[in-house]
Structure formats: structure tokens, C-alpha cells
Image (cartoon, rainbow, N blue to C red; front, side):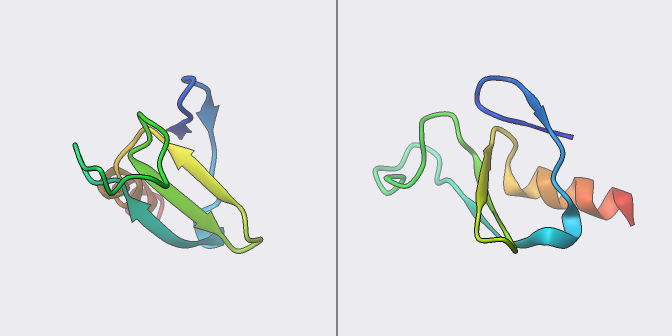
Length: 66
């Protein structure tokens, strides 16, 4: 279970994740990220999900499912 910026819960199918990209804390290089987004998850259908959790937390939750 992950969370969108407005606090809604979202389930992401781990097998559909193709890559994840972490926002850099306090960096001007975050032009691809809305404020509050900590991880951008790309999926196999070409879409992406922006979540409040860090990519490390997302990876941890994926590992817990195995």
C-alpha cells in the first residue's frame, strides 16, 4: 500500500514496475517532480505513479511481498 500526494491509498502491482526514480531532497533538479513526491514509479504499460514514500520504502514493501 502506497500513498498519492493527496493521501489516497494506491496499490501498485510489483511485477508491473519497470523502474523507479527518487526525488532529490531540496534540489532544484527536481523539475520532473511535484512538491511532495518522493518516488516516481514507472509501469510496464508506460504509465507512472507518483507517491509520497521514498523509493527505498517502495523496494522494502516489494521485498515483504515475496
